[in-house]
Length: 133
Image (cartoon, rainbow, N blue to C red; front, side, top):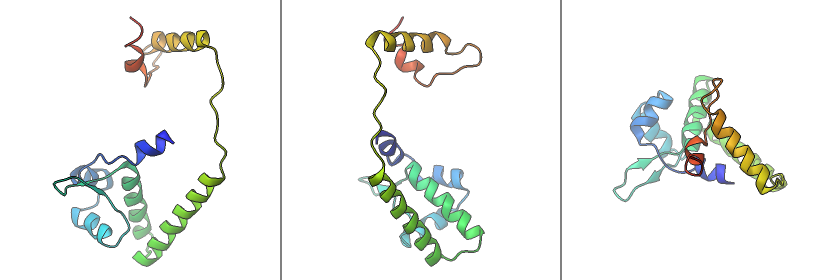
């Protein structure tokens, strides 16, 4: 659930989205006018796009390259969204495995010590460094 929140959080202005998708600003705005993508707006009416919006634009671009028209693309994207919603509703909520506080402490300490060694990187290294010195 937290991952879905992060992916839907609006972050990117249209210039960054143009670089990521290789679409023009006009194309992106046209897809918005057609209801294929709906970016968030700031108080000053600037468009901000999320990771999900960028992925949707890339899917639209692929469909256009394959020769589909906008009506077919809208239909496919709507069906895809409906299937994802159905799977989310049916999927059981996975619980994290239960480990003791001592095991958690040891696991975090090991990750911090191994970060940067043996070409290993840790995405949580910055977070862990606040607790271990």
